[in-house]
Structure formats: structure tokens, C-alpha cells
Image 1 (cartoon, one colour):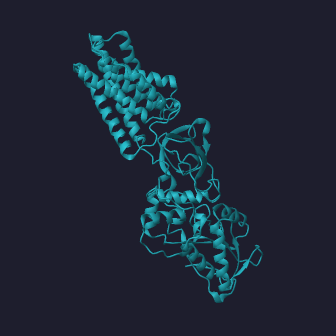
Image 2 (tube, one colour):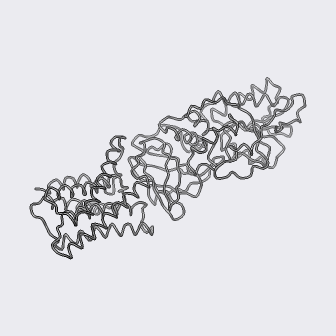
Image 3 (cartoon, helix red, strand yellow):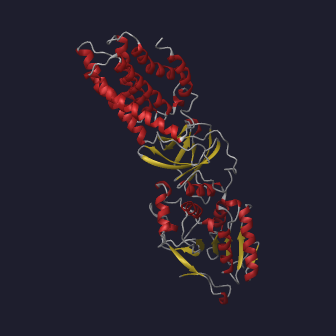
Length: 524
């Protein structure tokens, strides 16, 4: 009679924690907060019960309440667990270990320490200790499995401990020792869960900016769009692999003109854990792509990294705000910059590097119209008479063009506003690029500090900065001055990327229109 609810609960929970489940799934903020508070509360009560059990005598009501609390804590911990690694038979045994002490607590007979009860207490406590030891030596895969196992086993040990009544010195010593060990294992495991951010609930179906702990190192990553299906994962470097299982791991690689590393990954529906691997070490972060497919542009597009960079700028403030595809249209501000750039080239001969994106096509039209007004000769081919090259393509095409032009250092390269990334800037050739704000403006440093540490050395981009400024509603008036890289810029440091530092860029003065076609813009 007292154990009747257990089979139904076991059938329901086995599906949630067995090989086909992914934990709690999508939770509302209030529901997630309630579950978190409940888990922490049951942890505190269970740990206190384990420590005080040897010195206290419990009546039937107290025994039932504490055993139920410990079992409930174990079930709640399952809801925060990446349970896909638990085989179905093991999931059933876990539920039995949590439910059997509750059934005994409801029964009218109070067991002492018979062999079966003693064995259950020793096994669950030993399992908690062994799981913690395996975690220290990184001997178990998948990531976080040791912590999950330790917390589950510790809750089960407390539940068994509560229903046991010592009948002699040996049994009293067993209760005392296992109580202390179970309490320590439970508190240590829960603390690790909290520190690793396991209780943090990602926004369902929204771009996810997260940090995975891998062997003591924080690995920052951005998942876009964080929906079922194809996703683009952006990391700070190309030495990271990501995936939802060992068989789906994808190594991040460099993309032309784009900072950091990039991995194209398929995600399923519902809450899961994303594995993050650096070398042989593995960490994980919680993900929840939800169940709605993304209807945006194809993330295999060469312009996808630029879009993700813009999403990064927005995600620092509010990832729920939709970010437009940057290459889908030419902004009014960028068109104004291109008009000013072309007007400054009066009397010179230029060639335009474009691509088939709507933004590039519109940018090329703006440049040609402005060139006609100011006497700028536009050549379709890169002939010897061409003195300047105006690049209005996306990152990938721009990177290929600039690389092909490296043997010709005498031609000036003029970059469109969206091409200001560390990968496209160079001190080896003459490049001129626009910045909306002066590098000494505090807004640059604020943006840098807002970025996760892994993204600071290279990931700041003009498009990401612009999106961040829009999100924070920065009131400053843009200057839209043009700059070139200083010859002494060197390599960007870990806390100050090159193009954001006022000492490694120089403002460019426009050439004298009366000086002839051989004159060039010069640093001030």
C-alpha cells in the first residue's frame, strides 16, 4: 500500500532520466527558479539529517519526512542532470534506491541494520565517494557524470541512513561514519553543480553565450541560433571541439576574415548538454534549443560569421532581441561613410571588390555614383593604372582579395566599415578603414570589458561593436574618421586588441585634390 505510488513515479521518471530524455526541458523562469530553490533546500535538509542522525531518535513521522526529502532531492538532481548517458536499467535502479527507503519509512515496522539495509547504505555511500574520486582523476566520461553520480548516490545514502536505527556499537559507528561521509559528498557535489553553472537555465531557442569549465579553464562560446537543426558555434580559438556526444564532436576551424574558431553543428530538440573539448579534457554547458526550427538565413553562407559577430554584440545585453543579417542591406550610416571615402579619392583611379550580397551590390552602386560626381575613374579590371582598391565585399571575399593583393603593396586598400576585424587589418600593406568613434573613446574599452575573456584578443569587430552600441543606446555622436594601422602595432595583447588601441592606429588625412593622381592619404 505504502509503496504503490512508486511504480507509477518510476515509469514516469524513467523516461525522463533514461537514455532518451534530456532533463527538465524548457522551463519558465519562475518554474526553473522554483526547482533550483527546492534542490538547494533539500540538499541542506538532507545534509543536516545525515550529520545529526546518529545523535537523534526519530519517530515515524520524522523518519518519513526526512526520507521523502532525501528521495525528492535525488529526483530533483536528476532533473538538472545530463541523463542521456544513464542506461535504462541503471535509471530503474536509481529510482529503486531512492524509493525503497521511502517505502520502508511508511511501513509500520522499523528496521534496525539487517544485512540488506546495511549493504544498501554502504553501497550508496561508497558510490558517492568513488564518483568524487573519479572526478578528481578525470577518469569518467561524459563530462559532469561523476558529479551527477555523486549527488544522486549521496541523496540515496541519506535516505537509507534515515530509516536505519542503530542497535549496537558497530551499527552506531556505521551510521555515524556514513552520515558524515554522505553529508560531505552531498554538499561537495551540489557546490560543484552550482559553481559549474549546472543550475543556470539557458533561454530556450535564443542565442546562447556560455562558458564551459574545461580542466579549470573557462572556454567561452556562442551558439547561434540555438535552435533545433543547423547551428554555428563561435569560440575564441580554433583548438576547441564541440558536440552533444563523442560521436558528434566537430572541431572548430578558422573562417576567412573571421576571428576565432567556428563549428557547424546539428542540435536536437529539448534540453541537453553540449560537450566542449580542448585536447583530451572535456567540459559541458547546458543548452535548450527548444522545438522550433530557425527560419533565418543559411548558416553555411560565407557571411554567417559576420552575422554571429553581430549577435555576440547583442547577446552581451539581451539575446532575445532579433539581429538582422548584416549583408542583407546597406545601412544609412555605412552608405554615408562610402560616399565620404569615394569623394576623398577625387582624380584617382579605383577598382571595386564586391560580391553578390544585397549589401555589397548596393555599396558598389553608391561608390560608382559618388565616383561619377567627383571625377573618380572606376575600372572593372585591376589594371596598372588603378591606384586604389575599394573593398565592399563580405569578410570571406575581402580576405581572399587582400591575400591575393599582398604582392602589390603600393596600391591603397580602402575597407568598408564592416570589414574592420583583426584578421583583415594589416601593417604589411597600405590599408585605410573607417571607425565610427575615436579609439581613445571610453566606449571602446567598455565594449572590450563586456566581452567574455576568450573573445577579447581577436573577436571585437566593427559590426559587433555597432550592434553592442545600439543595444546599450550609446548617445555619443560618431566621428566616422578614417584610420590606418601603425607600423608599430605588433600583435594585439590579451586585454587590448590592435584596432581598438589608440596607439596602434593613426588618423588619415585626405589627399589634396589639386595634387594629382599620385598623391595619397597621409597619417596626421
